[in-house]
Image (cartoon, rainbow, N blue to C red; front, top):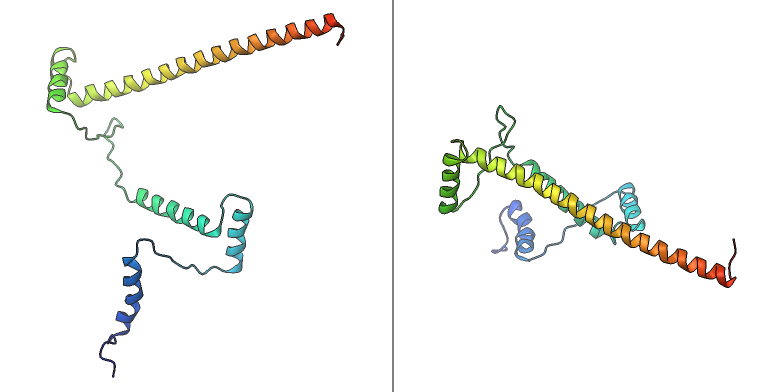
Length: 166
């Protein structure tokens, strides 16, 4: 009777999906019971999310991100508790590191030298950050002392003028 009608039920089910997949952003509908909706609304009313849709998008993104992270292979750890990672170097960089290893590094492998350099750089960065924080704290303390001194002078002036007394 209908020549263009799909022959199987499964063909009819996939037709709307095919159409939806062609659009750039597709919508989905969720069925929630009252208890779930109340829980969603509590997050919205507390101001954590602007709407139910925003909350559900955030939940979906978090789920997909955690699922993708859990599917990543866990790197192998050797007997020393270290993980080996690939490093991309230019040929001239590798040649310089190999020369350094032969002359100064007492023949150690390049990978061990690179690991030591990274650890040392990380420690130096932490020291640099600590120095920067300390300098900032010292500047803040000096500024605070200056402000306190100015307030003390102002208080003395007010006492001399008789505005305030002790």
